[in-house]
Image 1 (cartoon, rainbow, N blue to C red):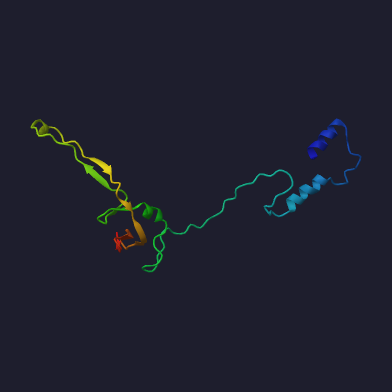
Image 2: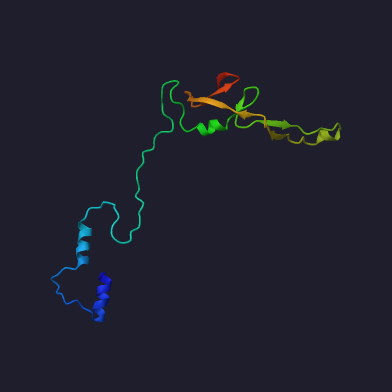
Amino acid sequence: MRFLKRIAGLLGFVKDEGHEVRDEDDVDVDEDVNRPETHLPRKGFSVPVQVPVERSLGPVLVPCAVGDGGVQGLKWYARSLKIDDDGDVADEFFDEILPIQSSGKEDEHQHQPFPRLQVKCNARPAKVRNQTLIRDGKVLQRVEHQGRLQWV
């Protein structure tokens, strides 16, 4: 509003009131300065500003009694584990495909080609019941296999 009043003053449209009377805009400016910050919406356009908030990050591993709690944050890993028919637990199982060797003396002098690996598809997802952290820092999973629970 002050801007429009200045333009009106330059063009010759002046208020007849004296300087003793305070403008409404001056009152609003003084109120804004004296008013405490409440972070509530005010008159006019406003832009929301991100205020940094300190978050206390908790520990990833929390000590607890044996058999209590478990390990925090490793359920995503436990869901990706697979178990095969022998009871072995791993992320993935591979079959080794050996190259066909011909019976000839010329092949002895050449380098043997590397075996190829193929992902086993018959491994099923492991049923992880519990996770624990042992003293040397390893994380063990308790897996159900053929009706028995075993630590892996």
